[in-house]
Image (cartoon, rainbow, N blue to C red; front, side):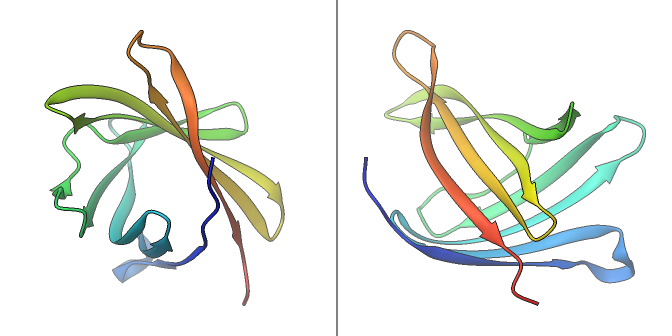
Length: 123
């Protein structure tokens, strides 16, 4: 484990039909821009994300859905030439904050916690 800090700004997109997130972190050092929206026909959230880690933009397999009181995003990413399963879980902490926790599969395929960010509303 390590410790880092960062901030994100999440705002409604044009027309209020999407969310736009701009995220900056010190560990890992990354700038990320995400667009998220609800796909009514698929009954799940979809997203496109772009970052400066050299991965560019992705979103083909990025989707989130309600599982109880959590939003769970399932996706894969490339690491060391292999496709790795992962998920991010959003959990509301109170009316002003939520936690986002990422789980990444290890060599055996077991999902293990990689990081957690606490998002706190400041406005």
